[in-house]
Image 1 (cartoon, rainbow, N blue to C red):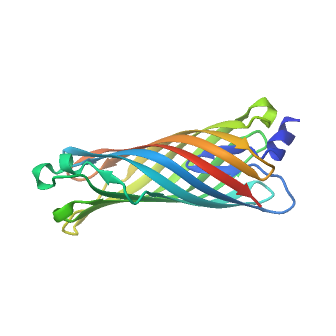
Image 2: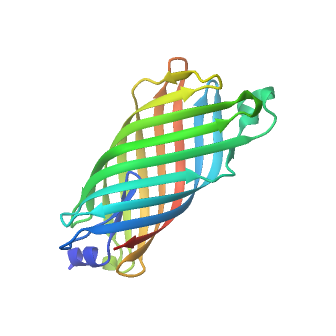
Image 3: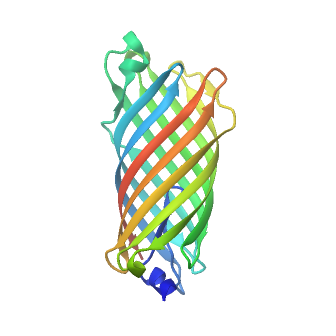
Length: 241
């Protein structure tokens, strides 16, 4: 039966930065994830635009109850050698690209169903730090709430894996801190996330996951506004215990 294949092949559905097994068991299930990826990033800075491409690495840990309610904690960080277009952003004040770092953390609660549908909501935080050489350091912190839904579709009744699609909406607040340590808060802002995933089961408890996601946050500060955009691709190894 189709539902049995979803259970036995540990179908994976991507929703709002999250991958979760659909399970049906007498005991709860722990899921661990290790990820490597690549992202492109852009964000407004006054009248200019910050842009960069960087590698990422991530970890995730989930617990899934027999009812298929789950909780997930995930983190993703940029590579240590990431840099951004500081020379373009700051004109003659900086003469080379400078260090870029970004950390993303999510805590999500949701529920999966037998037909591959999933809903969830949670809290997310993102911290972007930009070095400006002799000018000091600039940062943008985002804290928000998210709600999402998605759907998984089996390939060859699950034997060849699963394709999932997802979408999410976020309400958020952003804080800029300039080189003098002065903080400016944004208005209450919003964002959207769209994703697609392919999952291939290696064994009953191990899967390989490839996913792509586009996120955009529409942020308005008192003196300027713009969209923070992230396009990312990730390859993950998931294990279930």
